[in-house]
Length: 453
Image 1 (spheres, rainbow, N blue to C red):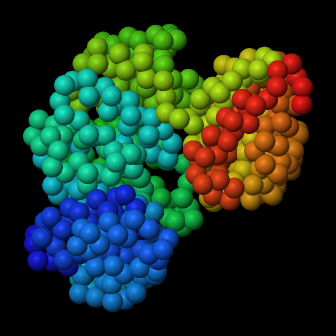
Image 2: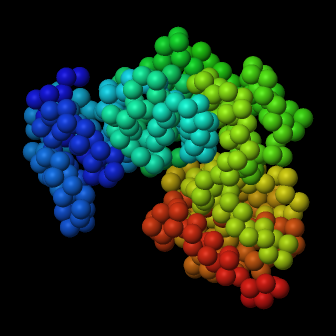
Image 3: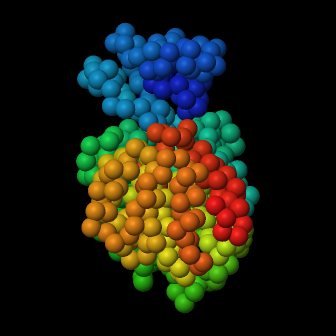
């Protein structure tokens, strides 16, 4: 799309919104910045947008912000807006910030999406490809906005882009092409945004739609939904995991059946059985993007995981305390529980927060088999309690994270694990999942030794 002289509206003044405003201004657009928050709430963000030449429309989404717009760029998390729908009907092209960025990228994009695990896999692939010596940008939904890659060596020929892509970002792409596209899984999440599981899955599947025969699509072996979505595009389909994936776990090793890599799982730097699957996906994606066996093996050995993703906080009186605060949906909590399948004892689960739609039944099923107790926290506690009505696992309510940790500690026995994997968003009691995880870790580290309460 020719941008010079066009009128563009950027909706959402977060980091990606500001990056989009800067890029559009440099491309010769007349830029309008729109956000539901007022100038007082936005603070320096509003001033920065104005400094980049944007006309501000704040405190709502007035029709005049979109009048005559040629282009509307949506930041991640912007809800479906009537004003945007109306602009589209009147000829405006509506795209996500990652789609805008892709118009300026000359280097291949390795895109990673999925309900769970995408940040871990994106980081693994990024570190593996950085070791190739090529300029590498890692960002998107994780870290820096994709528009910030524009103009860097990574965005030029000879560079490479590794991008985590959310369903919100993929909803509004038209031409963004991933030379390697990875879909890790699709489970119930963001139904408050997408409405139905089918709509959510379709958004995830858009990562494959613009691929050509020269590209690669990666999905888990045996996952019929992910396979069907991969076949919507023209990329060559590869699978990982299971019994017949190109990269899979066999006899205690991660094995790449094409490159010949054989890596002992005991040497993996990340914990949990679900992270073995993530390691397989990352190894396959990195190999298809040009990483060597040595590049892959080095990162598998040294990468210790991301904050708040199955982090061992402490071992106290024979009990292990794990922070998986990033488990903000049911699928992630199930993966966390399954990831501790080789743990010798039972599990004490701390769960709850803001409900995101979907059933908690899979969590109940796992805890029925392995649960010592469930400690309920936050606004969704009544919904979780309802899901556990017929469960033999004891339920306990907690008013604060300190209360939850204390109760989980009192219930645990030597050999057990206490797992914070909330299956919910954090915004009822915390600023973010990271804040929740930090508070959990603080409470755990404050526990006295010797069983005192």
